[in-house]
Length: 296
Ligand SMILES: [Zn+2]
Image 1 (cartoon, rainbow, N blue to C red):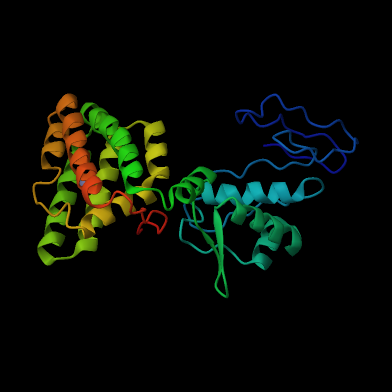
Image 2: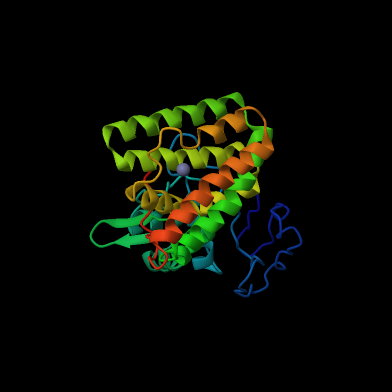
């Protein structure tokens, strides 16, 4: 843990965080410039540790001296990335944040504003500030694909989901398959009730479960960042009468269960090609509804 004494050099070695290991602390007593980028100036705080399991707001290290706003931004970001402040949740008030970070309300306001611009936070008039996305990438993907053509979103889904299906067939656990079957049952039950949103929600959860069953953190990261668009794409198809067939994706899940990567990939490709065909027939010019957000 890097702790800087007032006017002194850091007591502990610099953090071993990737990209920061080569950083040299400012010499003792030197005026530390407020350098942008990842060179911590003297007084830079260590990143917050993992979120405590208690759900309490961890005490944020008191920020002082240089680059205060940047430090507060990083502290707030840590809470968001760790899930201490979950997506959709309200973050502490400006006054609380000022106290937690040991900075002024002005500093906190600017830090929050910066995260609003980055798409991680959203201010709601008269209600507070909420977490919108867990990362710049997720926020950026949601914004960038908002209004994209369904066809383009479906093509990207196809690219990601066919690969995910193949990997899932290799790596799925027994629990992964059980979860997929549960979701198919839940989707079919929703279809019987005529609950189209329930159909979409369970179908979405099934696609997400298959993505997770690939057990590839990079693929998962990409797919998770794309989830808003996936949900909107599924909802769009469902409301047009797609995906209410009780056999939908059953072959895909069985292929994954059988460890048959080729069959899983071809089932996933077929399912999406069918949607692409339908969209091509009746929705070529209709922009997507991406960006409205997936349900929790
Ligand atoms: Zn589906």
